[in-house]
Length: 221
Image (cartoon, rainbow, N blue to C red; front, side, top):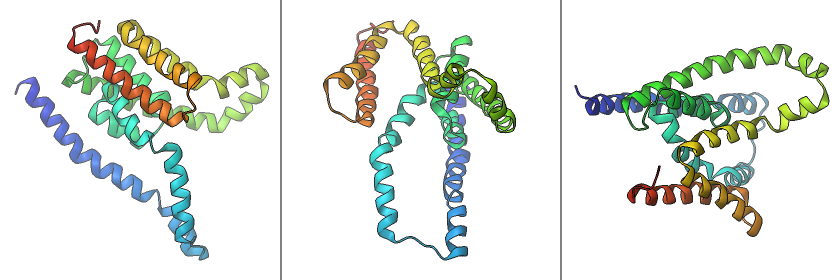
């Protein structure tokens, strides 16, 4: 089998395993709520449920489309299934996968990239599980003895630092695209009243459009 056939089989198997697994996880997430409502007979009115869902969709609905598309290059197909199943995508899975692709010089869309990103994400899930468990046990005790400025940095700026480092990693490789990836959200935030969700949507798809133009003209490097 050549690489193209292997990649095709890899994607087919990933879909066969990943799709029902993620759907099952989504359905089982309702079990605690169903048990609570059944046990205590506290079913909310349908209108309340739809209103709550509408508020969540209005705030985070854009991410339903933005995250799978914008993260796919780093995560790959199987990595996307794993990441959306385990969570912490932006601040854990994407940086780990992107760094693994970088150090192994893997090209997105190849079978090597799929394997590398999947292994990196699996490693991050295991590490995250160990770290989260440890943090639950000793985290509060450690935070209580740290200076306030360190606690503030850890709680408020850790995610920003991770995203900044990931952006810097890709900016070195594609500086022309990075200029627009940074300029678009800054301009939208300063000069338009758009909500954050729309800023993210326009930034992601705008940057993809510009990157496509550079690619077609051979100016991506």
